Length: 343
Ligand code: DAH
Image (cartoon, rainbow, N blue to C red; front, side, top):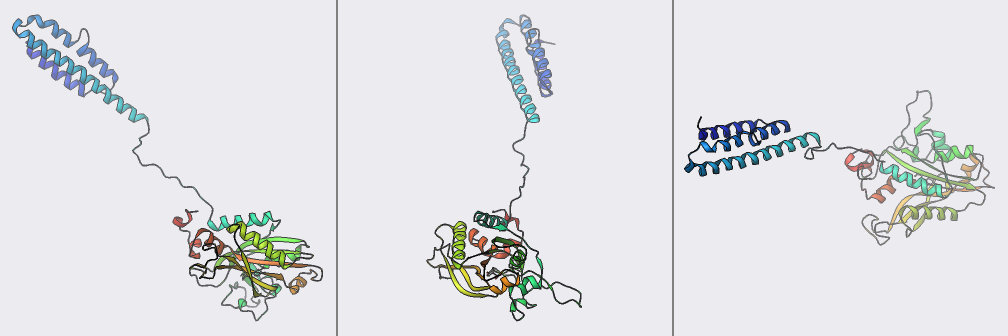
């Protein structure tokens, strides 16, 4: 084979072998075969003497070009091999990640925990009672007499009991029955709160739900007055809504307190100026309260001549709605993650 033919043959061979290179060992072998001291290109340079001296210049030039080409191509192949290798071993950052989920506390739990913390700080103990309650604890002992509309079948969930037993069991309509259970079992001084679930036959809408949560408060001791109630309630709302919060007590009626009052707080949105939320009144209604009726104290065996007490009850959802700017109570019970994940 003439040396000219030989050079094109060597080029073809190099190209095909370079394409087939799979690893650094192949690559090294290729470098030795073509560029090594005894390699194909060296041997072609050695055969220059066979060429007609007038063609030597052109031949030498193209042989040199070929040598440069081989050297560049080998570098290129080496680089590609390196990239492939590192891609195999390491993380592929272009792949979509695996999303991880973490749980969180329900907004009502968050608010409840905060309320409990505030009252604990003021020396109140936490007590609980059953959600399925007897008519005695839910109504009778709380002086909620037979004529009271809250006892109606249309307002209260009565539990299914055999026909020969009077309608004796209800889902508690308020947390107040816990007051009775505590006073039956503890001697004054009594200072407790009772957080928990309550049930009423209300048709769900933006401000009603057939189940909701309340916190009951009760303080019984010698010489307890309405001034203590007002001071405690004010301190509580300031802890929850901020130190500029004001409270207002409006006369009201509850069967188990006398006198009774409804508690309003200065609107947390307009600071009492009047806005859409407080219906321009500057006040938000928060719950009921009052001095424990002597009839109730007598019923649990606490002498109203010696002891007095106050009580209050408030709704947790209402506080949560104001705190978090939620305008529909049903959101708390729909378990929609898009809502719950915001807390
Ligand atoms: N139980 C009442 C209700 O659910 C709230 C309430 C009012 C509780 C006055 C009290 C109280 O302890 O003294 O509407």
